[in-house]
Length: 390
Image (cartoon, rainbow, N blue to C red; front, side, top):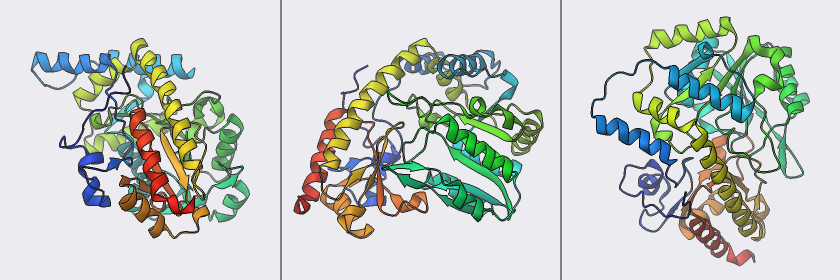
């Protein structure tokens, strides 16, 4: 795979590129899109071949017989994560934001409180509030420049009205790979406060050397009766537009409640996504992912070196994901000022930290899943935009 190839996505209905100017004021013609969490790379050739085979057949009817699809998911989880999954545990949702919304709908009621460890993926809070539930923001602490959990503080925030905790593992936007001990502490917290634990592990395949992701179901098997797992290959293989995610529920009672909401809302998967995922979760897909992670690791080093050379800027060390989390607090600037320099000076669109909740106010999130030349150009632009600090 040639990850260095630059692919022009402008004018292709790419939200990342074609909405950049409207939302951030960054010109599409000259700007660099580093906000939406999709990659600038083509997927593995096996995925492209599956789509082409479907297109060449020319009939786009309803999908039937999911045995190959479910078998591919089970193979991937067993071979890549050491996790044995039964086929009846697996639900297919319209992506994992939809999966999150369904969990909120199935396991909580209007007015209930749902716990988030912030700053965290912004869509969680959006769907929680849209469903008439209350978001409880439990702020992550920082030790040695990385996020850690602060259970003493979080215990004090609980009122008894909380019904669910949504965990982002690995963490977006901080890039943490939670240790087994940390995951067990999350499980204990949920048991202590009688919470359903929804573990969103969409970034679990994008882990850098020196770190190892552990599936929550393996880290704390004793909480199966309150655990809902969420996984997807859409981030892994850059097929987010397929909107295909998996909610995996080992406990039969939780599974029945979720199945009831799926049936009531008439949700079923699209056939394109199922064919793509069946092809991706394969030996060929695994080799592609290994090559991708190695390339992203190189991008990570280049981006961090360039950003950290700018006085007042600090990129949080990435252990997983392709989403760099940059703290501008050392500049002494307001969020409006450093954001203006990035968007108008460097002409880069990056996610605003405040949208990720409490603790994100001094940050911007940059997507580094792009050809290396683009990452190098971005760091040069940032250096020029803050040249007066150097």
